[in-house]
Image 1 (cartoon, one colour):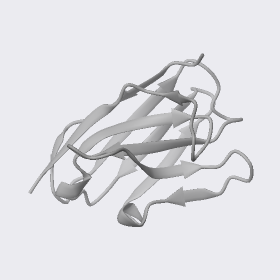
Image 2 (tube, one colour):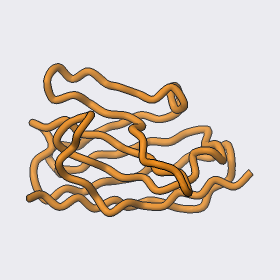
Image 3 (tube, rainbow, N blue to C red):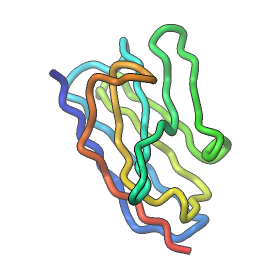
Length: 116
């Protein structure tokens, strides 16, 4: 089973930017990969995901135009680039591998706090 380790979470002011990283112990290039967000006291939801089937990128409406996903397959690492952060972006961010809707592998999460 692959191990995923997120990093980069921090306290940032609204309007700021942050880049999260997810280092995998195994390959990412043949899998659907994505990032998920769990606000305080709420359920985890998908943020952005790349399908392994056709490369389609699914992005939550709340982050369209602000968040993007990139990957470095040589390093088995994916990234979440977050711009124009809002207080509602606060929460724990998880990376996942194995599909956009029902991923099989999860990281432990990294916390992002956006102050107003």
